Image 1 (cartoon, rainbow, N blue to C red):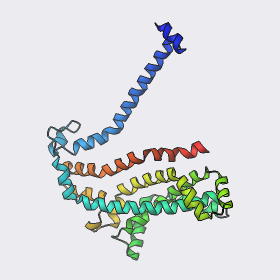
Image 2: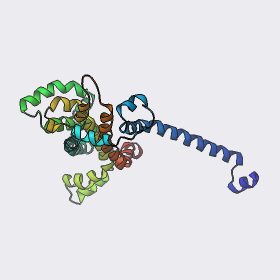
Image 3: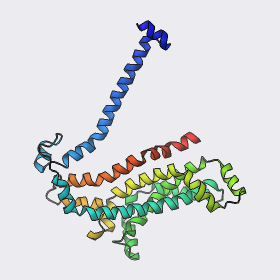
Image 4: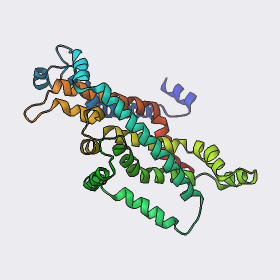
Length: 290
């Protein structure tokens, strides 16, 4: 029977069995890796539905009593609705500012040649090397003098400024791979540079822009240090600040903390699942098209 299969397939039966075993081992290893990667999220959602007693006594087991009211209590105590709104406003505004300015700068640096081009490229590279949190004190002083403390702008402007270097380098690296003949043909047809940017380069660079948007979203949504230093009004607190409501100098209410964390992490998971294909395209396009 093995010889019949071998004649029909053109491969030795033993080699076929080895391929099946190899594929099975690889699938098992990948499944284990996926489980290890997802377990922190699974543990978070399990802990969100436990009491404080079970959190300590059964940290890695399913809860005996599923406390669904933890989600409602965490929402009310932390003011999560207002925090989600503030984080959404700050994140979206920062992303729009970053993507627009980053795409414009990347278009100029990738499609034009001029004397100061190496200087500006080095300047943006220097921006990527500056530790963000080392600028908290001077930024606080500047914002206090210009009256931006306790405003959305206190977060939007620094977020966009520190994300711009990465956005410019990612988008510029992608735009370099687009043939210049497309641009030259558009110029011959009478299209100006603004038309080339908005009608051609911007749509073509969507994978790179999506990558920048996801990375920026994760950074803006989860930032705690800038919000803690620049925002003191309860009405303007973001999601990371609202999570600190359950911890005092003496104790931490873990059942509500975990419930609030479960709420806060859901938008990140949804956004990543929706745009994961664009992220992979943006990360690999420069290497493939070069």
